[in-house]
Image 1 (cartoon, rainbow, N blue to C red):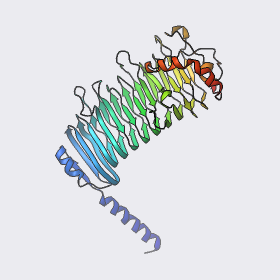
Image 2: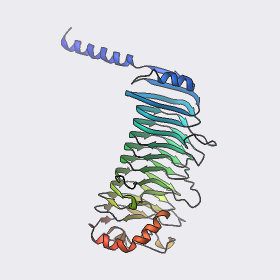
Image 3: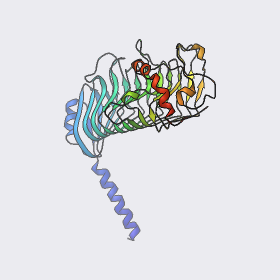
Image 4: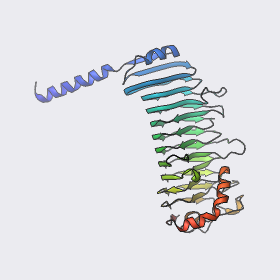
Length: 366
């Protein structure tokens, strides 16, 4: 046997050995699942089938990914994951259209690393939430469908996440919330058919910082779409520290609410090539607001159906006022802040002009 043949044989044996070491376990009850979790090792798969109530999986740090194949499983109460590493959930039906979940969320995630959800189906009762992640790193949620939840996905204190190709339908609140988090990519998600509670104006994607913590940073919002009774892609709470290095590009918002895109006190950020459409009959204009901050580039965005006479607001800011740049379209942006922002903005109007004179001019073009 020559050296090449020997090398190929050894490689084949090594691959066979690796594959042989992986195992597939099955579970149809919570008791069986608890037993299986004590036996699985990195690379193994747990195949679930049947209906499960409140289920907790915690205190497992596998060296490589353990896969929970939930494509044939239904969770009628919260699936809670905590103190885990290297765990992937594939498929699964989560939540209930009538009952409340133990954690107020169909899937509760706390203090985990390298945890992924692939194509989950989540249904809510208009009050409970979809997936909530707290204090974790390296989170992935892709290909999920979320219907009639209060909010679909929330990240709080998360570093490193990819949220992509998810569809949110009929939510009563925000689609995606990113708070006190860093290095997050939100790509090709959809928010449609929102049914906000009276007086609410939800956002498809909303960012915010937490006072005393580092500002939310390094967030990419790309290729997402929002339609109907929702605001678009926003970061409002400059009083809490603003935001650093936010990229909002190639998104589309076609709606009835204001604040299509908002970036308050954003620093070193980019808002480019987005499309903002004010639908016929909208009480407010879908607008682009860049207030405060510095070194932010705003360019290549399109405003469609933009008629300032239809806006229900007594105060208007031109694009030049909002960005420190120019107003090439000669229009105006009706700034209608979040309710909690009114007091801060009213108090700060007198300071905005002086502040902007000290800042670099922003680039605006359409």
